[in-house]
Amino acid sequence: MAAGALFRNDEGHVLLVPLSYKNHWDIPGGYVEPGESPRAACLREIEEELGLTAPVGSMLLVDWAPAENEGDKLLFIFDGGTLDAEQERDIRFTDGEITEWRYVHGDDLEQHGPPRLARRIRAAIAAHSNGGSTYAEHGISI
Image 1: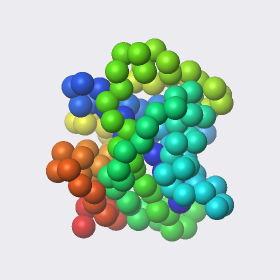
Image 2 (image 1 turned 135 degrees about the horizontal axis):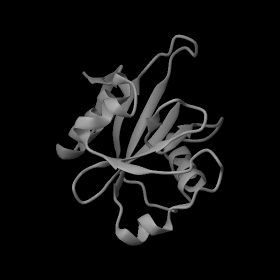
Image 3 (image 1 turned 180 degrees about the horizontal axis):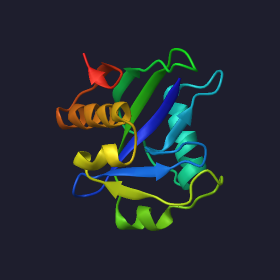
Image 4 (image 1 turned 45 degrees about the horizontal axis):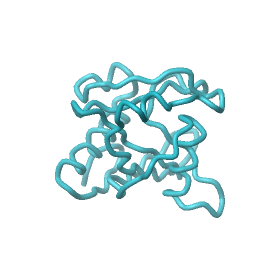
């Protein structure tokens, strides 16, 4: 299991980060540790990766996303809300996994990561817009 946060700016663009152990950008987040809830993992990863203690809202998406070399995965995306200018200035890279961040328009997600990640993020954006949550498989809402 893994969990991440969907942070947006005032224009609705999504905050993405390049992780040193991946060859693409992703939302802030990471693997859930044994005995840890997905929400707790999301909060921990935000603090570790961005240096932020940010409130995390409701769950927007659960995605069943098996990976060929890793087996079945459940990926959770929680609502990180909209970051204001002060929160953006407070971003600090504390664990060495990340060295930069940027906001990306939803139409440009494929330029930063694989198609199924783009589908997953768009499904979470749609869930947020609809005021609910969704279940997906391979990033496609069911």
